[in-house]
Length: 65
Image 1: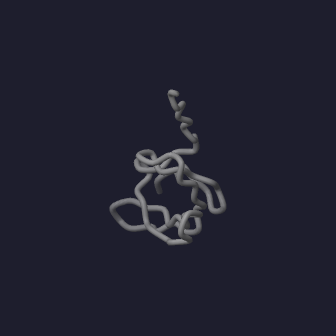
Image 2: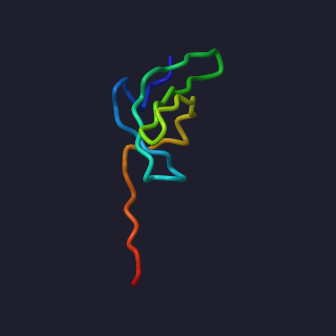
Image 3: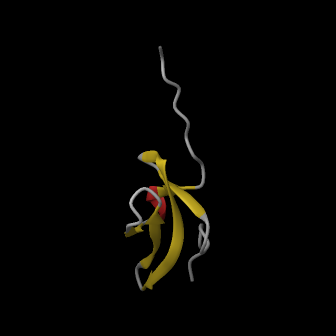
């Protein structure tokens, strides 16, 4: 069995849009691997994501005046 990078209830961020926080609410196991069900705080939608799309680190951007 593969080692999981995220646990149920853990806060994660989408790598391409790190301002969007979500919570891992499910894990889908398949013969080819696994994916994570994430509930996103912005619109309370649930979507499945692969591990490579998620991160634990929130990236901060600095705005220039």
